[in-house]
Image (cartoon, rainbow, N blue to C red):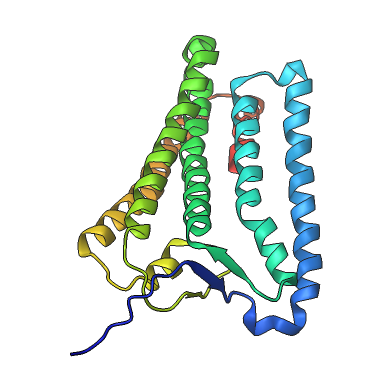
Length: 246
């Protein structure tokens, strides 16, 4: 009778920087400085928008929410990565890995759909300027953010549940510095074709749908701008879209 090792994986070991052991302290300083710069930049953006009443418009509202998502996204990954750069044992619990994956997927997917909402905002501003205040009222803006968050929540919940319901009985060595989908899925003892198909389909949906919505919005925007007779008018119209393109 052949015995199979059925020991459940209770924690994962990160191997993302194992090949750079001699440079980990230097990497810690570099990543810390970049992280502080990112936090400072987003804090300036959010505080400026909140304090300046002239910026209390839908476009800057979406920018502030986008900055909040980006800041929260880094909180999920970077602090743990910085700690691991100085730690001897670079581990994360099974539950902690699931929570990390769910959170960064939720924020990342919500970010993508929020970009689509910003594209719609610019479309309304350029193509329907007289109805802009009606079509992009405060309730509509909150609804778009809630919809983007709901899409991100649904994708992250389904994906995380599918992955962490798979059996993990073999290796717990994760060749990454955080719990991303692909490296965690490679450690699963068995792969369900259905679960992989669902994860792939949802991933394509999250990437393609916002991209298509943004492209459609900007096709209409560019078409409307090119119809503006004056060069100054076209420049002003393009400048209103610069924040999202940046």
